[in-house]
Image (cartoon, rainbow, N blue to C red; front, side):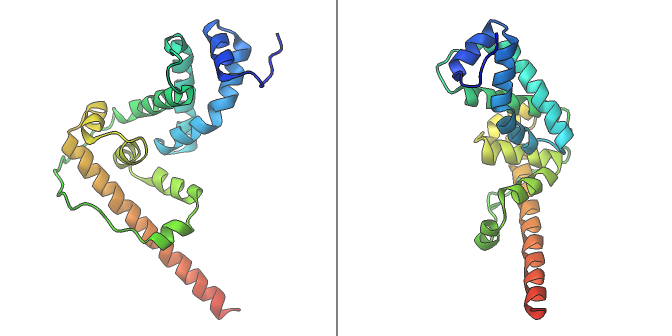
Length: 193
């Protein structure tokens, strides 16, 4: 049966429930790119993200019969990808648990943030140390509360807050380095024009 990519998600999902390999391939092809971006945010490198992606799809196909069509399939799949990626973080040992002060907000220069591309920002987030990256993504991007993050990662809510604060400080320093680098480049271009 030669299927086309014109099938709806519902048709593909129903085909996957019936173990149709063509439907599985088409559903994978439809969502792999978007889900790789999700996995990249939780991974140290592309190879690790690709492993998390594959693991996530295996888990999704194994439990697709549980999808009840009441919500967004993409949202359901995204949750599986996040959970698949987070399993690596459960292995992390969060040492030096420190309760942080509540004044952890950092002012970020909006000009530099507006000048960097999504790709540059993703690279910065990928460079975050593992514990910082997991908490930052779960809080800032996925919208988890610190108590939920703590439960999922096996840490306290205070440690989650501390890791978020450290991640923000780390990103702030990286943004400042990038801003300095851009100013130096602009100065060089101006003096040699």
